[in-house]
Image (cartoon, rainbow, N blue to C red; front, side):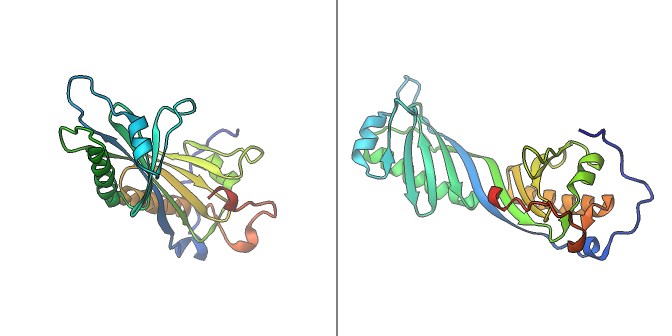
Length: 222
């Protein structure tokens, strides 16, 4: 991989395409972890009992130690472990986590699981997809941007690890992006805005006609 070099201090003015960047993005997935207090006596959830009681559950301990429960409103998938720990995925908004967990806790209580206190919910990751509405020169970006990796023979997108706010971007030549690692929607917005400013500063945005003929928009990966 080429050695990094800093952006030119007297870079040319951004092109009309870069100057007018108006990125769009939306949350695709929110992942949360949940801890349920089962007391201090080493109590565990009998996952077989839960699986037999509810048709929206799958439990195959030979393949995976957790029970898979699906909730339709809000739509989410929950991994429930015998220790009382859970992972919630598939949410489209962080504020949906409370309703999903309340639904699961209600089912556990109906199955005679003794829950001692309110569950503790922690948002671990928000995944968003978006569009910068400009093509990006990934070869140049990989040289200029710190903490960027681009190996088109392996993957068509550039992997960029933004230090602050701490996030990871997949950037494709058409300007399509995926952002992961944020814990709030506000952090996603801040990270996307900072990325736009960097595209302008480094002069790596391209008009449509300037895109390399072998550019890949990464549509299959978003």
